[in-house]
Image (cartoon, rainbow, N blue to C red):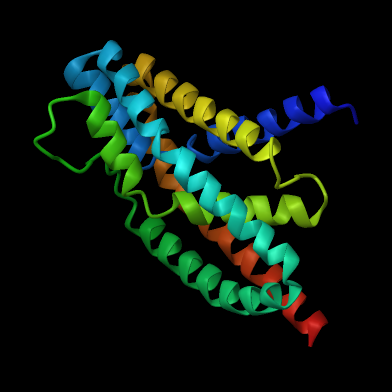
Amino acid sequence: MSENFALFYHFLIGFFMAFIGLMSPGLLTMSALNIAIDRGSKEAGKFAIGASLPIIIQAHIALLGAHHIKMHPEILDKFSVVAIFIFFILSIVFFKQYRQRKLTTKTLRFSIRSSFWYGFFISAINPLAIPFYFTYSTLLELQGWLQIKEPYITIFVLGAVLGVVSILTLYGKHAPTLLSRLQFVTKHFKLILSIIMLGLAVISLLHVLKVY
């Protein structure tokens, strides 16, 4: 693999990891929708740029954590045990949310007039960002598909930042259309998440049983 291709490859991994990770309705995407409806698509664009900046720090922390895991394989076994309980709990939580079948488009409301800083704040307090990048970057590095060293870290993070900007901008530009279709997507998405988390719990359990 040539150096230029490797750089482009890591950029694509970062871009699609961020883009796909935010495709489902969530805090950031629903906030982008509300900004677009209340303030217009231009302000939604500012929100997207603001929301992308905390990713620089969050993705860096996650990548360095994933690299530490690879350097200390014994930690991975302990991580797998903890992951079993986390995935099972998340599976139950998402299934209960699915049973309620309520569409929620509420977002946190703050007296922040600047769409840019509003996006920055919402993204900075997102509790799922670091675990998301940590989990998938750990899996990719263990498979040899990701190199966590410079300049690949910087290129990956750049791709993730642009991925966040892209998906949130799309949400902002197509707000009315997306809002009318979110009820069906959200109602069934919780069930899909529940099944995925259950599957990850089983995979982690099998890994632990194989180790011990």
